[in-house]
Image 1 (cartoon, rainbow, N blue to C red):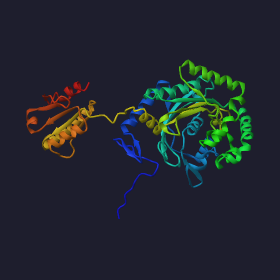
Image 2: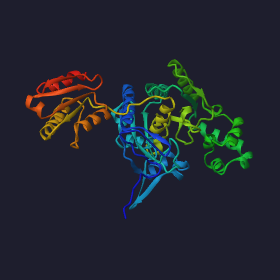
Image 3: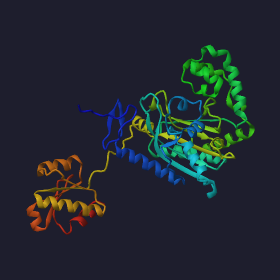
Image 4: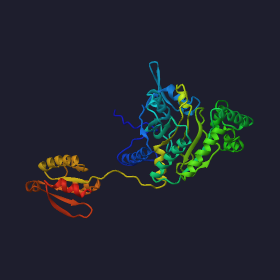
Length: 432
């Protein structure tokens, strides 16, 4: 009995052509390549260098890095054991980057490390539009700088990426979490405020009220959001130095002409996050409108084993959600490069010539295709049309005996006879 295999739910194939899977559009590999290269070029313009970390990491690294009380760790990790070691498919890339920074002593290279990454991540969450069990992240980390300019530059880079792709319908939300001493004071104030309303909270929020009440601020429950309208505001508990840092970040963003909205309930619910936090939203993503987000996490390195805190700030973004925003703003992406030349051959000798011609032409930079199925001239011309070739080179027995080829411009229909010896230089000159 034959078995038909399909990709795992919550994952998708990226094909040479765009297609629809489970009601969502999956862009072509050419579109992915285009977006990745555009993002890469912008990040490198700002002086960032690429870092690549393994997909497989120790479970303890992620538990410490992301937080044992988060949904990611408690519900969504793909974790398994092999011998005495527990592994996880990484659900995010910041903790692995900091692990790599510490492991390879990158601080000893001097100066600030400005790193960027691309790569797949994995979370066992319910698949929905724009959210998958295997998804793709890109992001940056500025490690070793506590200056407010590093925070502002991180946000500026993020905004430059989306502007560079043509997105404009975005909203930047901004807040400050204060330092490590601010968080306990606000946590207790929030707990005291919400305690009388425990019966109105969901089971998840009641549990968070004991373990990490700041995470309740992320709730999507309308009743809970209404309760939070009169809750204490985090900025009222922020230390003076952090407030000055925050004011400087806002001033720098204003200097750059970057618009933002202050959101007193925007938090990162993990203890190692400090000071600046931000989120970028697109109206084209539905209720979960975040397209990118980040902040300062000066205490993460110490959580992962560093003796001293290492100041760091960064952002992360999902490729799939980026494509949704591009689709929502009707920004067209390339579907792939059409060949500059399609070689149409008639006969066995001409077929062998087409094979050699294609290889020689490719070596000098021409994008060339030819028939691999021994089809008729009519079928080969249809194929040249299908792949949108700019020109067709036609060679048969007569052309070979005369040492010439027919070159047809597919747009105008004009054609000319060209010496086989001059064919590649002529085509090369016409490709510019």
